[in-house]
Length: 302
Image (cartoon, rainbow, N blue to C red; front, side, top):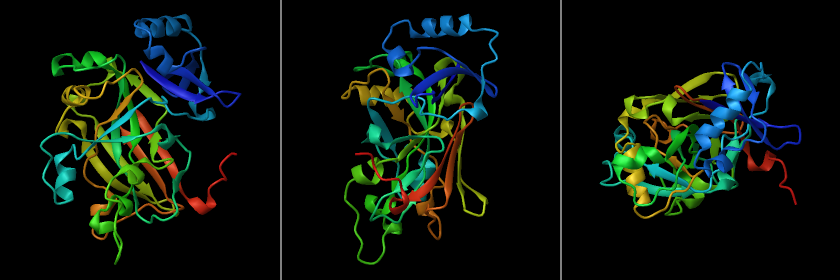
């Protein structure tokens, strides 16, 4: 089943079943809360079944929201060999983990804000895995039983803060760690579509692509890869992460990105105010966001 998250009349979040270009609202349904119920799939099916025949709403008339507001966001670095190779690195011996927080999550069409002090924003299209059952010390054989479904995310990165040499000017140094470079406000655009686990098989290969869209409207393809090329598949990642970090319903694993990012191009290509960035995964959908400088962003609410 495919779910679509959108803003309701009170600017809160509603969820509907997505069928083609229409969305049938599911009153009272919220994905993260639903995942806390043992029988959430059956409940979802009952709700959807009771609304059969409804034409629903045109997706083009809706304001998208992130598919889920996650608890924990566990990200995996260098999980595609071609991405490690384009940076001149060997694949790590074990999954390389880092974290983002809910402050980084923004919806489709909402701006990614370039913070004061960075000049090297980059994009990373990634498959997001939504956890559906608590996972603690889970084996690979049982790992997929803990997956609820999949979303599209964009792991926005400030490469100069990250310390990537290709992004540094004379005399510049990075932070020496990734938290600010990866976890700043608006640095995790998330698509509105959630697809249940039974609909897709990432191990068989889902196409991932990203584009930088310049102010003149030109679309520049950046990444074009397949989830089949992940070094550690979803079961291996869940086993590794859950050995030390309990994964709970509603948590998200961002599973890494293929080659084609801007920092390793010659010359490097970075996202600038006025650009838009689009990330798309076959079978799920896309998330597209404008880039805005911090000085032009709306003032934060008091």
